[in-house]
Length: 258
Image (cartoon, rainbow, N blue to C red; front, top):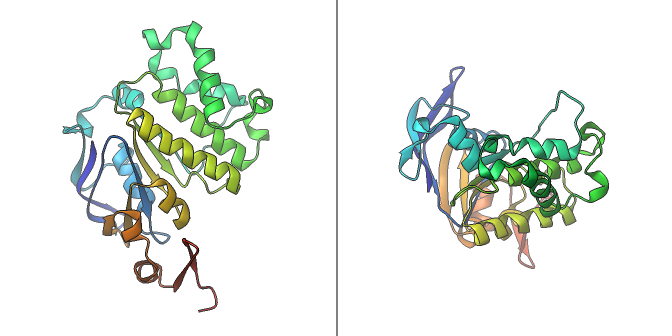
């Protein structure tokens, strides 16, 4: 289990997180939702170890995240950020192969295996073969996002369970079809490999589909967490976002005319 315990984070005189506690268990997808500036991405970055909190701690299987070596973290968890800029001309397949670097010098990192693992990750992320050898910077934002998902999948391949995957708005650049495929991939990763998945989403219907639990953040505080059916009600979301919501056919939508 990965758990944040009473996390408080201050930067530049602002309190970004206020005593937030949240756990992600093996085989579980947890979605972070809330308004812009609520602290969703910040909490995710604290739980990956990228940011160090002013108070509180993050633990992995009961062990402090700070006690884990960077190599151990790189082998056990992968991160898909909102944006990933590449400074060098690399193909899609070369980007995905970067995910295998933590395994260099191990049996899982044997050169003879790497091409197959990269191809499998690209296929699982829904990247067509026609894009595998295209330069990354010539691809659309949605195509690049799928490449980054494939890189993350390649990175945790071969790691002992439970692995962890952290994603920050992974569907923001995707069309509905590719967004649905990505969400199905996340669910399968949790169900089949017992992965711990923490994902930031703005689309509430996507959160309702993919998540086992939903955590609601506002102004750096955890307002509530629980099953999607309990968290994603029109009444609760209206308070969270300050706009009226309506439910129709099992879907939620803000009432833009209200």
